[in-house]
Length: 224
Image 1 (cartoon, rainbow, N blue to C red):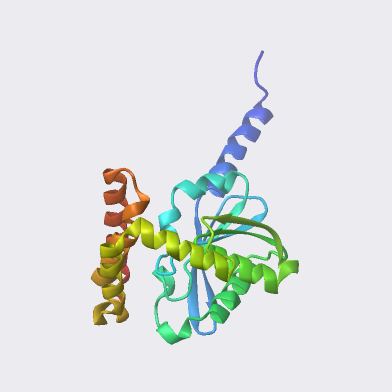
Image 2 (image 1 turned 120 degrees about the vertical axis):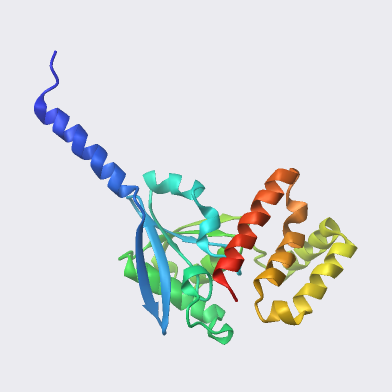
């Protein structure tokens, strides 16, 4: 039995459309003098991805997160002052209020009245705060490795973190945080801090080295 020519065309163009849907689309969103770098991919309900940090940009989530492009239109963005959203941004320009305005501007730019928010680590703070202040603009919350949501939880986390890291490493990290290079945003100092911070999170040495190498490269690329 021959496959009808029309069916062949439908299959051909559907595969082309699928490939186009999975091709990343890049745009800039202007908010209060800052240009936020955004990257979207996939089709379906809008899902805004809020990266962790707050020193990182969205790229550590790639390529794994792109697999969800079959379910959602994923919208990533580098938060103000990080990654490709860092140009012309001063430290004092970045506050929780500015972060929430930026998120709202990204949502509106992509035409979503009710967005799904996918937050990782620090990104869960933004997701929760935004949902509390703009509940009608959020349809779902997906929170991964969430930050503490109460003062009691914060104290519990700090206690657990100190035990896991160890007294010596904790003191080394505190010294880096107080140092002039770290305060000035020196990439080497920032990378040194996170080498200590993430060490207890890995059972495998190769996985730890893979993360720290990628992280240090990104910090150097971004600059102060």
